[in-house]
Image 1 (tube, rainbow, N blue to C red):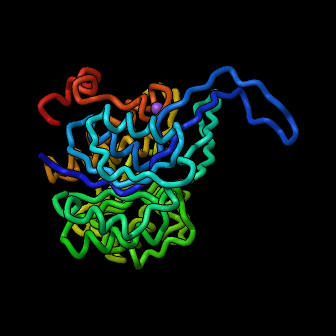
Image 2 (cartoon, rainbow, N blue to C red; image 1 turned 30 degrees about the vertical axis):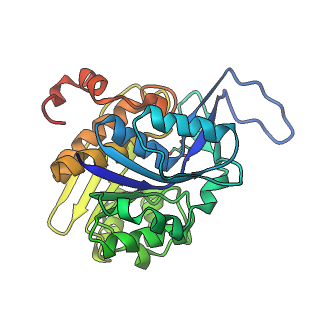
Length: 309
Ligand code: RIB
Ligand code: NA
């Protein structure tokens, strides 16, 4: 079975569905609230696992009820909790605000995620070495991300970095050995210091990343589709038309699905195509992980993909 190591964050998402943001000093009533498991690392792990991948999750939870909830959630989704490490801190939480146009604003309080360290990677080394892909995001200390990239390089395991949330102090030189970097436009701009307003600018910035040594740059542009650039190819994937209810975690759905498809097929264009569908489908339902389908339900939504995943 294909095995993916996700080295990253977990959070509890506290999602308020609002009519508008309150102004300073104002108390405002919101019509709805939902709590769910989130965090970019966990979201990507859950999506990959629901699509059939065997996922190793290396992450840190706190010592509160949120931690128990997160652990139970990993177990319910068939992800081993051997490397879900307890920390004497609060668990990561993400208060999220979704407006009537389905736009979101997110605050992250990293809590225990700030304690995930390079030595945690070493403790899991023997099992990570059995994986075919390492998946990373930026909700853990940057030094830990660099150590994971280095680990992949030393052990010949391809690394996928989702440089999210956008991190001004990320050093490109330390992550350029990644097989895949998957940013959105904002993250791409921060990584390259280049503008990304127009399609040409986005392509130029992606080329800069590729020319720095990143084998595959996959830019996820939401309603503008996906752009893939490698040494040999440049391919554009148009967006799918869906009725968006909540776009939170759509990027994570894309990455989890891409990772799962890529490990199985090693076909990048194919994996992007499927991930594009999976992410689009996730925005039609509320929440992050709550909106990720398992393989059977996903195929029911898109029967034309049957036999392809
Ligand atoms: O990418 C979406 C995720 O970002 C949410 O689940 C939230 O936890 C934040 O980490
Ligand atoms: Na969603």
